[in-house]
Image (tube, rainbow over all chains, first blue to last red; front, top):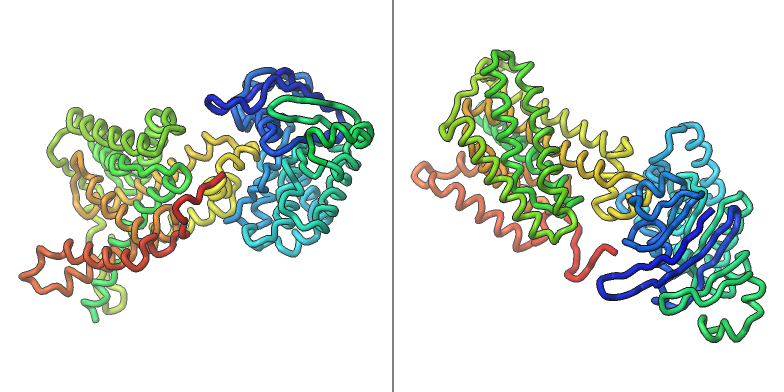
Length: 233
Length: 299
């Protein structure tokens, strides 16, 4: 579904990502692991087109590296940015409507809205509340639901567990697993290595701007040396 | 009593005019961080469109008014496409200088192509008569102005709350790149904001022309300065603030002229700006703006 070849991202003179190549197959849940500043966010921002990148990004057999972000989203890609970035001055309902901005099937949108409000009941209670007043966990749920409202084929989540209470983190991973069972293909950036490996099918380890390792989640989990080396236990 | 009602109407009419222009400035500023000093030339474009319409034999105010509004929107979209889009990602001082450049170029175009001298635009003279509401004599023009401005603001609120593009404009004031992550085209959001600001400027131009009866190349300058002040009072970038600031400024202007003894009449601007300065000492961010600490930034 997604195949990234030798993608590089630089900010001025700083090389954030060098020749990264990854693949994500339909229906997979792939984790991107690595320490702070390793280039994980640069990689998915490059895939989403939020930062300028060189290399190749193929999505459903179509080269998209030259397309602006808007067009990539319209092809079925979605990204929930780190730090959630809900539209704080808009209500929960308005946030979700914007999530479905590119869709024209009113009935489908209404059905999806109901589906995600059922999955995240707290959002239904807060529909007319300004989203800036939600707690961190609620904002994360809103951000994910907002991404899902465009009915993406591939959803990229950047640090969905960042800054959440441990109990909420477990809940968040449960939601991500549910999305996967619904057939959504997921690429998840995580610092919470052990949790992520529990749910992922495969994982890539990024460090210092390059992919250092790839493998099945089970193999990675068993590889203490690798975890100590790149992921700090 | 009659006098009081008349002055209140005056204040509301001036305030409504300032609010229309200030809303346009605030709309563009809130998503682009661009202080559009060429907004006056959007107003002037609407004014000259009315002049040309009359020259071509279109005399009815009911035709001239929509032409002015359309011309305002068109001019705003054109300025954005030609001048502001190429410098969108440049520092905001570049945008400011671009706006000043557009303003100078367009003013000179009016001077060269039409005339440096005022031209009569008599489209609305038949509206400037007095009607009686009960026992009170009021100007028909002012009543119309208040009704139109009220409808325009209601329409704008509806658009910003109900339509996808309206929601996107509000969202873009804080989270522009996240709006793009929704698949909404940045160019459309910005062009729409400019078009709305041009519509409002066109409406303002109609009433300025109706009051003055003529236009000249720096027709839009004075109103935009007033609207800029209205934005500062209300809090820059806040749409509610722009309306509130515009109305306050209208009342301030009229109250000062009405209350200041005749021999001090020349001081009216000084008194108005003195009061505004005092207000800003207590609320430096304006009445309705969010307080943003230095160093806070949108990521």
